[in-house]
Figure 1 (tube, rainbow, N blue to C red):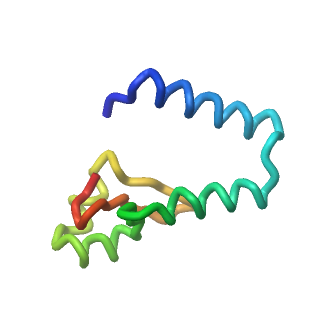
Figure 2 (cartoon, helix red, strand yellow):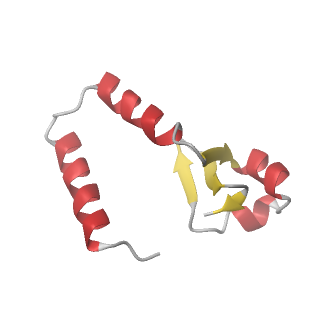
Amino acid sequence: MQLSDYEMKAICAFRNSILDGKWSSDGLVSMLKVITGLDGLDIRTVKNASDKLGKSTQWLRTTPSRIDIDGVQFIMCINNKKL
């Protein structure tokens, strides 16, 4: 996965603002709600994504769009397709 220069700079700036203590826990939760609530963006557990997409959980666990949060694996789907 290749990120654009703009994306890399934005991610670094966001990360640095978190590390610099500029975000409260409530602010970060609100940011996650904005990200996960975007129209068309569908974040599901690997099992639920497997059921929705008709793909095996083993296959989904190998995809670069997998996100691990506290030992739980999630897959981002847009319009019923894996990112």
